[in-house]
Image (cartoon, rainbow, N blue to C red; front, side, top):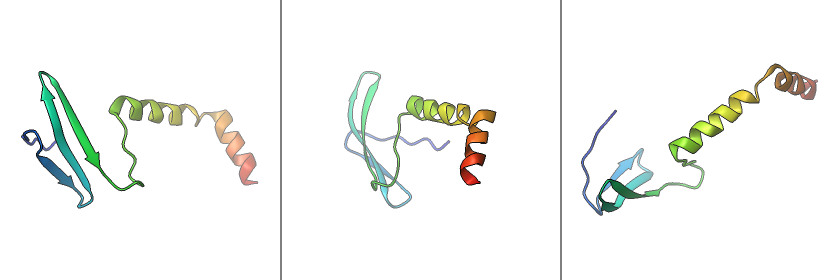
Length: 72
């Protein structure tokens, strides 16, 4: 993991097209802004993990049977 120090209104750029800016710092809470192309999905980690779990649970044997039937 890369660790960087940033102050309010400072940014980091990822992959030439994603900019993460520190907007505000209050106590142990930090507000960030993310500028990225529309096609780049951005999720809070807890939501991302829920999506991943949902995707895994949909890949049950029943789900695979439905998929196989669709491909016939």
